[in-house]
Length: 265
Image 1 (cartoon, rainbow, N blue to C red):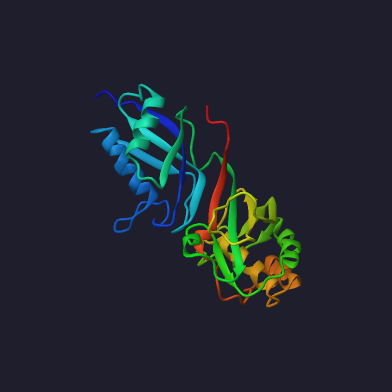
Image 2 (spheres, rainbow, N blue to C red):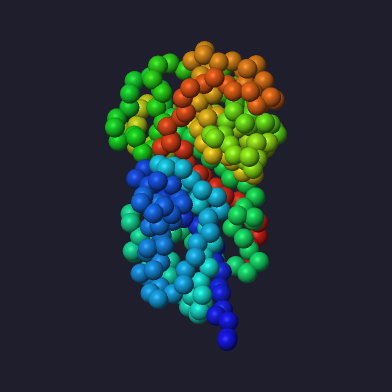
């Protein structure tokens, strides 16, 4: 029997995650992967299609640059530009296929993803316009942004992130490395209905545990409110002891900004 050939492609996507239950396909929930697969089945009728994401995103989390691998059986894509256009014509408006690149069979979207940058947008004080909900996290009350900026640098380095990963299992990797963690005033994302002052936290590292960035933001917010302090944060990252912080930052403020892929060609 002749083996059916396989062809491999790297897809780069942008999506607004507000109405999705994350990237990963789920039987009874709307996901980005499920929507993309449904579209590909229409664009490539009768073809065997498999997707491998370079990680996952949680429910309501958005992405400016999500990477996934397309494994296609049978004939290769004849025209990558035409495939890109046809796929985008059939995807919903909150998902866009940005690029399609042919890669070798040795490429693996998970293994060859070397670094990710997440950005968490937020505001505080007066409750913002409801239209902000898909883009910004909101924290009532006042925050000391200067104190939060100083504390953000504590996360840089290799630490025990047990207190910043939701429900870690026996095989969960608790030691994680953060190469950049910086809080800035937001001049990147704007809209007429945004509050006058908004901010974001940029976090870069090789990989992240479940809800890790949102728990990091929650710790900084607690520091900004004077409910937690920098020394306690250092101790939690050294020992893995619980922080005692009861809340997690809202998911919709989190955006995957970039996935750095090792040269896939």
